[in-house]
Image 1 (cartoon, rainbow, N blue to C red):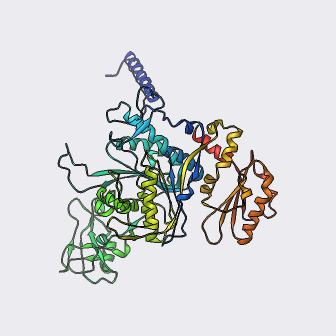
Image 2: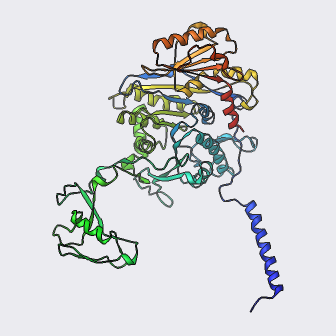
Image 3: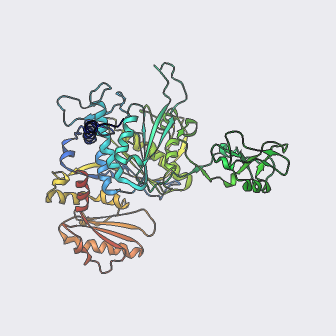
Amino acid sequence: MAETLDGLKVRIRELEKEVERWKSQVKSVRYGLNWMDVPEAFDKDSEDKIPILEEVTEKAVDADGPLAGRPPHVIIEGDNYHALTCLNYTHRGKIDVIYIDPPYNTGSDGFTYKDKRFLTEFPDGQKVPKEHPLRHSYWLSFMEKRLKLAKNLLSDKGVIFISIDDNEQANLKLLCDKVFGEGNFVAEFIWEKKKVVQNDAKFTSTNHEYILSYRKSICLQSFNLLPRTAEANARYENPDNDPKGPWTSVALTAKSGSAENIYDYTFPNGVYWKPNEGAYPRLSKDSLKKAYEENKLWFGKNGKNVPRLKKYLSEVKQGMVANSVLYCDDVGSTQLAKEQLKKTINQNIFDTPKPLGLLESLSKLVGNNNSIILDFFAGSGTTLHATLNLNKEDDGNRQCILVQQSEGDNNICENVTYERNRRVMYGYTNAKGENVEGLGGSLKYYKTGFVGKHQSKNANDADKVELAEKAGCLIALAENTLEEVVVPPTAKGFWQIYSDNAEKKKRYTCIYHNGDYGKVSDFVAKIDELRATDKKSKFTVYVFSWNSPDFFENEFDDLKNIEIKAIPKPILEIYKALNG
């Protein structure tokens, strides 16, 4: 029965109300992760000043060995928030691989948070217990700030790997979807961290952790293929001495297809074949006939079995895609990681260090043997140790940057992170009294520092002058020219020069950081002296300038192989953008 006009009007009004209700929900309800953002409190100096890096020259490593002469690695001691801020100037868009093993927020892993908003009510830099009302909010606020800074550092094909366990895995996944974009999720690896079953567990023995991976952008289409294992190749045999080499076989049927294409076939050798019920031919009848003629079918040793299609080892990919499950037999366990660390520095203060094989496997998935790798929760320094191993394995030039806090009286960064890798480079005597040969290589050690009296967004002229005077390490790191060149004593307070460690075609970074240009002629003379030693050397000249470096262009008659840049404005502009 047709509805009356009044009935239709009533239905229309009801539908209009329903539409308004949904419109209201669309405005107020969002899918995703929400938490109370808790501002983080830092020491007053670091909150009111501008971050820089300062080199600890006595901790520089320059070790003979297989890796001598390679680009230097870097360790930064300090809060990773400030270190990441500095790296946003020096390495923005340059990092190929980031691996981090952040606090898992278990309630007993030592995760601390300085709450800027509730200092009088909630813990100020104390351990955050599991029952704390803001436990997850603290952790998410802490991680979000650092992940946003880290995203800026990734190259277009860069990937970040983050270790985590069940305490924050679900929250981390949603947080990373927000920071990196849901479409840039790559994979969630499951790492088997131990084989031993913990029988006193309440419900199950937790033998795994997770490693989330996100790419910077769609420029990364896939991971690198991994070398094929002997186990994978063992499936390929050659029982019939096929001249095309080892092969394995697959069924001639598929699970899907068109009923119109189903057929049966009798081969010239008399074997009759047709797909099983519910299955479809993998090949057309003509392709099947051709496969038979080219000896690409296997009928068993007696020649009368149901045929299968040969797949040759020579036709498969030269590598293997990564498995989402990382077994400890392949990449190592927590126990192995503890043993590796103890063998190197004769101590182990970490409960859950990561094994070298795990970091080596992840690093191989992205980039190449010239990649730049960052770990800003460096802990025991496994990531650098793994990078050194990889460089030795394939004669690579990977560079690794580690960031680690001092963490109290023991100074984890100095006594563990640095000391472990210093020994790996120079060589050491292990716990058994055996001499272990060093891998060689070079390393620079920096600490985060602060200049000025105001934040970057409020920097005055005095702050800018001091930043220019103290920006040498930042600029040298940005140019990857970390070796300071000896200059005359009269240059102190006016200019400095850095170079890379190449024997020929050196790159120089020359910094005139003083607003008094009275020493410019000496500065230019030193550059001309260096240019005379190698005509193919390249120079980047930084000059203190309130606006542009045009003044210095007139100081060089021949600008070939010389690029001129201004300081400190570009540094401040990046810092200002980060601070909103």
